[in-house]
Length: 141
Image (cartoon, rainbow, N blue to C red; front, top):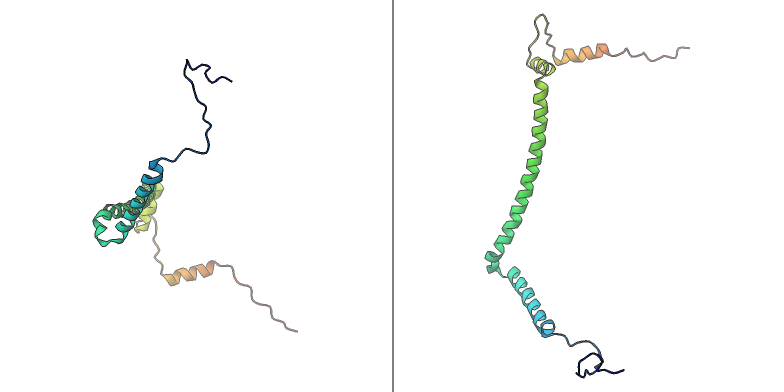
């Protein structure tokens, strides 16, 4: 095979590649040194007490995040409570609703009779409404 084909008079030498290219200076020297400086800086920043001024913004963002989450939970709770109260308002605006509310305050319709019963009277009334208990059978022989 002729190595001059297609190269306009220039002789191209064939060099077989053996192995890999030599790593760049960046990869062998600069990057490891940079990485070591960053790691040492972080360790110093975390351990030295005077670095509070540097780390304070990061702690504040963490506190703000917790407060934000707390406020979001409170907002969802208040929205649920608001929905419940709105349903109650809609019910109380109906005729059945305002009649029930009026009865809770002791109001009665004209011609109705109000009975006031104590706890003892209610317990006795409930006993009277229960079916009579059958007496146990006695063995008489």
